[in-house]
Length: 452
Image (cartoon, rainbow, N blue to C red):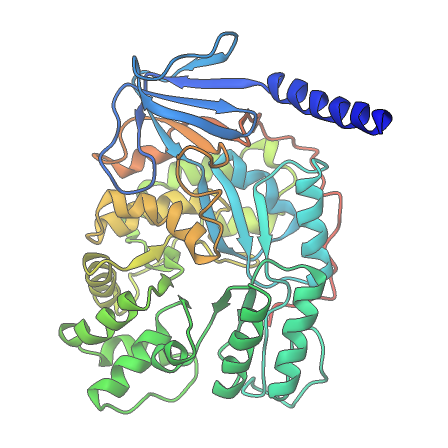
């Protein structure tokens, strides 16, 4: 018994010693925008113990712990680390996210074993990059164009296979489930029901948000699910599916009649992920072209495929039809209390620069009329809420993980200043985000996996 007591005391003493030796970090003097939507805190102090925030307040109200590493942030703005919960990872993209302040990222559809391994490598410290959350291969179904496929890699033929696939994903350890609009309504209901048993949020493409809300859906990707539901409510016919369907949907709805559907979505707490990069006003993109060209020509980005860099500086052309409808929806939704997310999407040979795109989209939606504070929340806290990690991430609050970016300027008066990043802090550590031209992803991505 005495031996057992000595062992317990030794363990407890060790825990106390470890806790006492955890590094202390203090951010002092800057303007704090904590991500919760309230007024900024001037002359703020943020204290970090290890990788968690232990105190937040004004200078003079919060004591500075002896021996802490104090970083003076006077004249700068402290923001939560940015989050992008809608991307499609490629091995070369990893270093760019953190360099542009994206400390947490979510992959929505990749080869399941590979993306699980990427997450493990990042969390083990083998690979520096954004903290990863993953869905694995998305759930696709019988409405997919072409002949039926065999079960596996996400394809499900019926309701039972949909449930089986969710159980597989839960067993392998994904963070959420992504669905595709090619599954039937019955399969969607089954996926949501099965995922709920494992505590997994369901995100993704849908056919009709009214139908999905009946099953308890809390997230919507892209606008077509809203637009189809709106057309049905207006008693108008749906356009045929195909390449031009999205434009027809945008042009046929009446934005002045959005109110009832918007209110219902807000009441059900649906978070909307519009994947807005393609809607960024062209003048904003062209104003950023010198920075994009600088990135494309940076010799330190030797790990980025040349065809990707070529896409970064390709002119986007004329504005897309329906831009006014997109802006009307965003403004009505945010004004009604709805939550949106600033997400990049993007696959191969895309003009979307990982990490950097986040800032252009924020500027774009502010240009469309969304308040700057909402744009910041759409890049931080609302992303975290979409997948249920807001207890740890997305805002600067006591007890949460210490992820910050420090920028020169005030994003509330000029949202473009979010690009002026002077420091990135992840898990309470100041990160070295310098590009290494010889960087190699330690786990190559399988070339056999195709995004469907």
